[in-house]
View 1 (cartoon, rainbow, N blue to C red):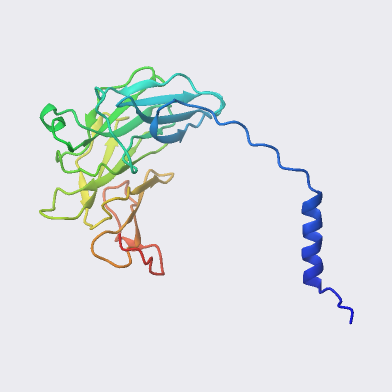
View 2: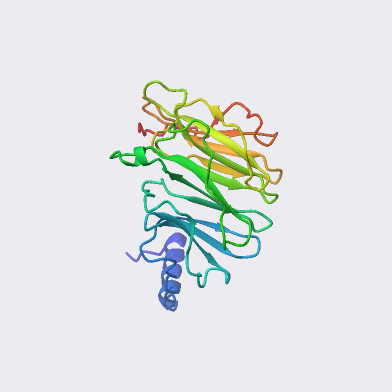
Length: 263
């Protein structure tokens, strides 16, 4: 008995024939090398179409800028001279952001204490440097966390509003006597000159996950993080502010279903 193709089968056959007649896709363009040997990169885009890439290189924090929308990059410059001691890995690298006046902000976990550096695993603090001349020069690095040596995981995120409001969040354990991490943050004003007192949102937050930060059009911060602790289903949480980070509404869980991830 002859079988008549169904409408679904005919539709599939039509799609397959059309795909067979299409020309092979063009080869993707070759990748642009920003810096040979650079690690832990992070990218920011300026309002003028420039791209800014910050990364670790030779134990320092370096920055490369593209003025042609990513086609080429200028030679990297040293944003923070860490004397070759900067280390990263597993999201523990530098961050970069740019405001509407092309001010460049770079944050990074670093250690400048000679005694601490002599240890096998020195504890970093979180530092900020700023460039107001397009990356030609950078300010001396300033420590963001006002409780030193209490951010050992060095996991953080940086966000900058168009008007120059800066918000940084990181994992912090200043209120912990045992295990666990909380989420600390700082509001930085005057284009990087004024580092605000730290505030803490109690955790526990995941000890190996960087938080996420964004700023809305009114410079109100939005925080997201993965919870920590001894939970079989670690959830994602979000907290929002309507007063530029002075206060936050009660955090809300993002995922409705259990993650089935326990850390």
